[in-house]
Amino acid sequence: MGDKIRKLKKIRLHREGTDTLVWGFIVIAAVALLLWRLDAKLWFWLFMAIFGTLYAIVVNFFRCPVRYFPLEDTEGIVVAPADGKVVVIEEVEETEYFNDRRLMISIFMSPFNVHANWFPVDGQVKSVKHQNGNFHKAWLPKASEENERADVLITTPDGVDVLCRQIAGAMARRIVTYAKEGEDCYIDEHLGFIKLGSRVDVYLPLGSEVLVKMGQKTVGDQTVIAKLARPRN
Image 1 (cartoon, one colour):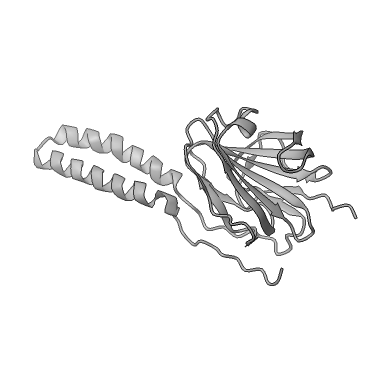
Image 2 (cartoon, rainbow, N blue to C red):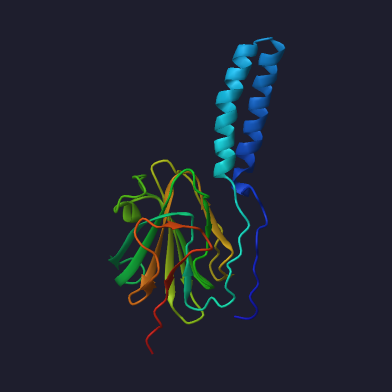
């Protein structure tokens, strides 16, 4: 696949939050200035306390730390595609892409987690598919099949297919996917972004070694969640 070209996005606040943060700042500043000029000091400080706190929460939500996976050799490595908590580790029947049983690892992101998503493996994007659906709570089992989602199917250099599924939750109403069919992809690259609470599922071949536990916290692009089973000849 040639030399590894890492297309790192060196940003501290994610671009998906630009419009929200800019317009939010303008509105808050305008109302605060009006209250100050009207000499409504009590209302000014009350407004700043409430909306200043809310704005800080939104800024925290859109933060996007620059991260580098610490290991040079990523062969067979599967990293966490998101910050959050492991809520599912189980074998499931996957009928849409593989038509066989797969090992599924699911990571739930709360509104307080970083919501940028990273590619879990090196490889080539085989397909990208968005599907509309419901907005069940993201940690429920049926969310994986019934909620709005975006599926990114990746083929590793060893020929192993890995499915990464971005799932909208009860609060998340927008999934952004940067992956493009036919493009090479690498650990350290952003796969996409999901606004507010949500979940990311990774489907791996049976026999892959799971390196995380239920309830364990993960750091996107840092925590190694599994090692892929070698493909059968």
